Length: 285
Image (cartoon, rainbow, N blue to C red; front, side):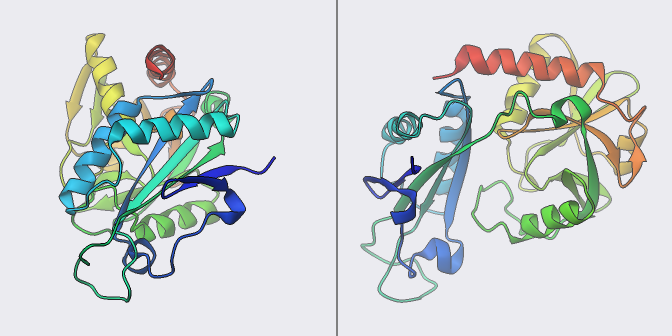
């Protein structure tokens, strides 16, 4: 059965899902996206993703064409129509298509809203047991990384470099410090058992999974410190890991070919993954 997508009010076969070549998302990357995980046919931490969507569109003065409540209804309908058990729901909203190509915001143009699903078994991914290798690359992105923009060329280049190197992720470096991964938030566990992750700001995307993991750790009286850290500090750490909607909590076992600790997922990372999965299942909608 062909996958069903959503385009501007209609559910259509994926092969028939189309937008105008004048759409500003295509011409200018003038749009915002979100990705929510699905477990057992239910959306994970979706309120956090929709709140971030509202913040991001607000930062670029882009009005959502539907309420977030309606967007969640559409997400659920897509999950049902595609018989999706485990995977992801992608959504993108752009400023829409004008009659030509002009940099300034067009007037009286309705935003574009599209969504589609993909299948992925996040919980049973082999890398959850083995961990992943990462490489480091310069952070080439624009100054407002807190906005979840569809302008992802720098991340594409970073992820391609990781793929060529046989790594699972790229950590981006700016001023000698780790900002974040190509599509993930970065963490380390120091030798004195402090969980460290970079503080939110314009330098990084405020990750939804990152936010949940920090809160879950603090609820269990684990020590969390939000600050920048270097690759050298990460290599000297007990453990390193990343978080994202498509990975949950994923161990990092080497950086630029150098092992982190013994080169295996550590007990803290494994425990945080377990805690997050428990949270995800308990709060799914």
